[in-house]
Length: 250
Image (cartoon, rainbow, N blue to C red):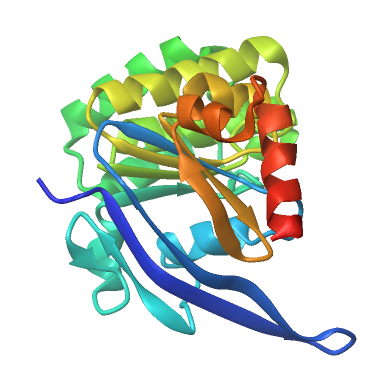
């Protein structure tokens, strides 16, 4: 089985009239395996969202390569998209649709037959507690409800690769735990899960490996246990800050 995601030497820059050329992603490389949760951590503006958008084929890099289960995502983006699901930081929902309508549309686009789609939708809505709001327009739901609906969309499609940008944004603790359990179940089914988060406790709880991004570069990539050994710290927030200090001193 090929790796879930292989990223090699990604570069992406943007031009800002005030600041000039900004190198958002500057030579990032990593792999994420089936049955693994890989977390990207970094301060604001570090390049996490740009990296995830490139992986999801929303952006095209200036240089580098991305493979999704062996498929070249730059040469064959449509084929790669059939292998992944993307949860953007703003949930990426359609405000005029209901959660059920949105999930049904994306399930049909994924090619699920009607009986399978009905069964999966029922199971997922029960697990995520969406039944009471299944027929309400998304624009009238709370941030947490929209996030759960977006996660339901991914779960029903159940692609081999899940890419999530801040999946717990705006969620209360009980809802966050439901989302986290969903990601753990996806990993246990052999899915590759890549996520960014600012919630250090979430990354520590979920991630099999952690990549720390700073100024568009990965400055550390390892298991939590090995990152603790490297920094001499125990809590991830302290590990994270120590790694940024080491990078600044280099």
